[in-house]
Length: 412
Image (cartoon, rainbow, N blue to C red; front, side):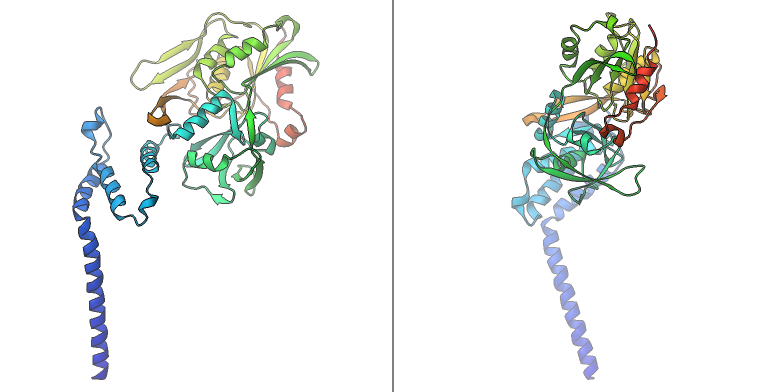
């Protein structure tokens, strides 16, 4: 009998606890039951797999977004932590990320300012161009002379940690924000490198970086007198810089020209077309294919500066976008010998669309093909002569790629 009473009391306590728990849950749930009913309907619509056809304001019900917004404002335990700007930017960034294109990005006002500074050649940080592919943040190219290049960061390195923190699941802009910082401070990166057995750890000191988009010099290499034209990026003033630097250049005094596009992550399409036009009498430079328009064929200007000067082009895994357009055009027209390693393989066109308060949308609007129809997005430009350059050779000032390019120059 005593045992039965103990069990009965225990069961009674359990029942009371269960009822109390259910009443508490039901009380909280009743506060949002109306939201829940509508949210279920909205979620069913959102998960239907439909795609927008023409008029998103008529075809898409975004009440789900507002429903979640209201729930957060009503239920989140720390209301002071709900930043309107951060929530709006996060919602927009999530929508853009859902497109699945690593080159289509929402940029906050801070991101937009950094992007514009990079295109103008002014940076503060480690000096590396990065992108996000298949969820991984990878290095496109360390900028020439930058702390990243000097520390040994290489194209296609995959960023794994920043200052010891795992960056899995973070967006590109979030990772870049962690890597950026005041000049004089340091950041430690752990990277995955294809040929390394373990993660590679690099500590890089940030600095203010002023990057010239163009460098030009004449020098003797392997017994030949050559002109070396280095394009670090295709910025807004690249062609003007080339004109200023080569104003007194006399092509008859050199055996040829080497166009160095290594670690050039790209830039403006117009600059690529203009540069290719310096070396070609006629023909296509690139074909641009857009969503709902006939393919646009961009041809040379017809007024070349050096159409017959023997030349070679240097590329590597850090050569991307506009740099690949130039290399691809000169290769397809058999105007130059391509030397180095296979380029990055970025074959799409992005446009920057301004948004309120300094934000912007960088959206992929087209893809491009070389004159022979080679899709740069599927595979980069393969060199005619493959020559690698190791970190040890770079640090020792040795450049076997340049030596091979000079050797490949054809006699006049």
